[in-house]
Amino acid sequence: MFKNKNILIGAVAGFVLVGAGVGLFFYLGGVLPWRQQVSTDDPLDIVDNLYSKSYQQDRGSYRFLSGELRKELKKNKEDTTSVLCHTLPSSIGMRRVYAEGGELQVLVTARGSATSTEQAVVTLHSLRDGWYLDSIECSPGEFAPPREFSFEMNGTLLKNVPEPFNSEYWHLMFDANGELGQYVPLFFDASSTCQSFGGESSACSPDTFNENSNINIKGEMTERGVIVKVLELADN
Image (cartoon, rainbow, N blue to C red; front, side, top):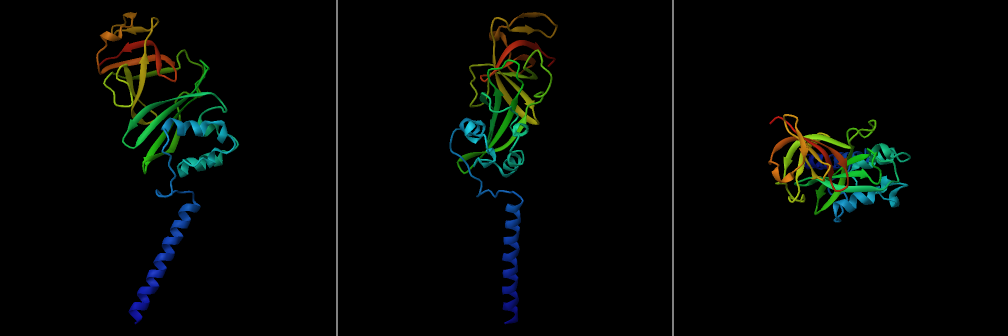
């Protein structure tokens, strides 16, 4: 009898401790996986909704945020620029720059201003056949002085790229913000200059490019990709 009573008391105490732990978790702002709300919309639409005017007053109330991102937006409710990396409201462009498994990243850039350096890398995670916004990182150089080029990066020249990227175009694969294997499409025009390893310059001829070449790209970032001004071959 006493043994059964002790078992009952232990079980009740266990339930109390579990309940207290869950309550503390929510009090501290955590979100359990089954409580995380997700959207089945296209990831670009999910990101666009966060940046849109409809959530301008209280973006922390957006349903499809991770617990940490929600706390950051609520903490900076009066000035969300530090979290969203943009002076809002502003016209923005978006494109996917990384996708692997259950993670996808979207680059959000200011639109309509050739001198703006406002960029944000928004990371989404998949859960239960949907997506939620996990984190936002401001792109390096966002607050730097004006530069000759809005995009300058070392990386690998590729045409054989994973979906959803279009293998019809050459891409630069590069590392940034601590994330490996980001991709950006490259676009060439009559003003694009290619420099050989020896320093010789000529008009770019994409048909002569070699897959997996190490290169440095300087150009202008647009919502479609980078308009290449200078492509420099690096030492392999």
